Length: 180
Ligand SMILES: [Zn+2]
View: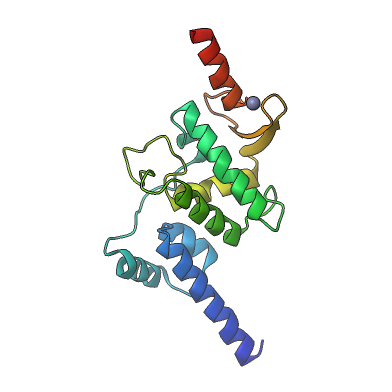
């Protein structure tokens, strides 16, 4: 590697670290991607950007994200944007730029309505950590985006949850019909 190309790749990693930390991705995840910055540096940048310490603790699991059927509709929307924006097969790879794009796009769709911290609202992903976890779950096969031929929409399923792997849009519609 020439000095120039080493400099360019270093610059690229710094820039990516900034973009991820700006969106409050927890430093334990950023650490898995960015090699040139020490955990201490990442925490320092996070604090400088947000004037608060980065969130610590266990990375949330995809099963813990939705608390209502409606949340699945929002997750399906996020995952659809992510899949459309991605240049790779999201079932085998994670496309970091596409996750960033999808998260920004998703936030712009619901300005002022996404509750970033507990108690969360129905709109999920509620923060960039969750967006990341969803993209990761699709890659490792613990969740999937599928097409419903009844309502012609994409729906999101998470394996190993209490929610059956069905289209939640149709499920909600059926519940409403039963209720009337
Ligand atoms: Zn459906």
